Length: 157
Image (cartoon, rainbow, N blue to C red; front, side, top):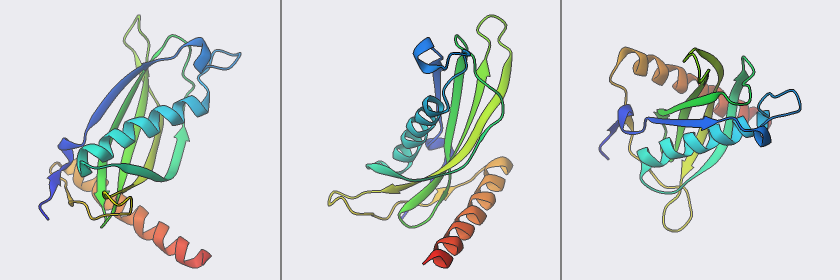
């Protein structure tokens, strides 16, 4: 199966934090942020696989800074690693002050998606081809994440 470059899966989404996305302190709910992350990551995974995908896990989600009502949320996602039927998608979020353009990294994480064939069962997908130095580093890190998760799953059985 012919591989696909990372660039074919890249997603950038913009969200505006509205009052119904936030708590009484005016800070975006973690659950809203997770929903945006899952949505962007799913688009990246589907762009790579070009078939339906389901979220298998959300890993290493870190909330670094709060996001305020009225700020823009810039969500970036891309496939970093592909196994046989699953892929790891890296996601990062920056908040952007709409008046000044100042950005802060607020959230990052990794999600694993499984591609589903027409029968609804996991199916093989093309490998990912990292091209840049950063993509190659992310690929190696994602490979280590996968090995760790597989080892942990085996220990829990």
